[in-house]
Length: 512
Image (cartoon, rainbow, N blue to C red; front, top):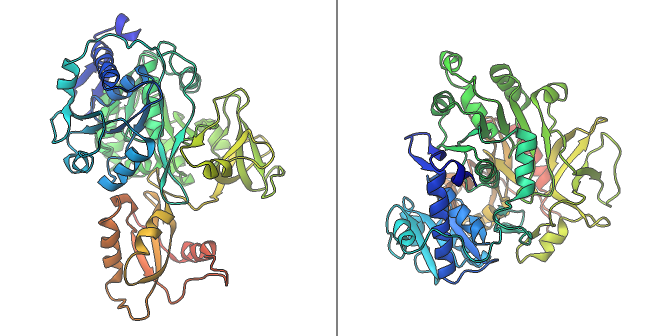
């Protein structure tokens, strides 16, 4: 629709270079790639995995999957090839697309027995280059008009990432993702005049969802290949950005810029600066509102998309620390361990009820994990594992997480996945991993180990960090590793992680 009306309008712009993908090009290339998926035998409900950074043609891959009725699974481009391969295998992808700049990651996927392997910009070994693939297929809609869906992976308390899946909605591509578009239009006034600056990677759920809403509503997506505080401010002024989706870590870096540079920034076009993904320290948010004015809006939601909250700057100043009230038809319930609802002001597990909302999510191939998110009595209520309370006006405050998930710079990090790796180190007898406060990233990864009695403790911290770095993505490497004499466990072997973590919350200083 937007391509027919405004074929030459920029759909995507790279902020650093000004390179542009028009709506006409996005429409044509996504139709051609959808045809390529069909020609390779992919049918509605099949999966395509995409290990692509903030590339100009990232949305081409996404929209091709939507046109072909496929599940689109983005892969964090900082994962090791083994971690990426697990996701490709686990979701049963029948096609994989990689960023041509990620030759090392692509090499680990090149031997996968898939009908289609595509790279962007260059023809990597084992992959066909996108332009060559597109040239083989016509720019016409596929025969079956079924709208695809995203299936993102989110790390959990059991270590391995888990795919978050819903049945494909009974909608056509032409109709689009109605709930998502309505949310963006209603909550953030997204429309054809929107210029959304996206500095966060599109392989994360929130940036990808918001980017698709902006394009679905005819706006312009302004991509940063990587976040830089000075470049961010420049992009807002140069491209007259109206919206930006950020994480609190970016706020911290922006506030650290020289006062003269901050004062000179032209932010007059900015109407909405949305943030979520991790807790934002109250002083940081207050400083950002003082600087940018009441354009900052916070949301609380998960990749599971089972409900959300929003809060404006004005509301937050009256309710500092809150993540807002339930949005739309969602209802929040705070419940105790037995499932009983708790009174106002009392902490409990946060459940969302979404009457008439989206189909319930499931964790792909993991029914027990799926079941653990459901309320014991009201099966239509589900939780992300967060603990919090409501005030008398219905504002939600988050105070903990039930599974000790670490959120560093807006990225979920599983403690157990790191524990599993460190426990394989020949000198480690026992290990606990958890998050401790970090001024810039919200949290950082902390590892505490008990060594074999014969082990040499000198230099073990660097050795363990190198051991993890060789096996996991860099954001999962512990910032610090401490050695203790005996790990606190019960006679039955249960680790008293809460007790251990609380000790370090008192003793560990933050690191900028």
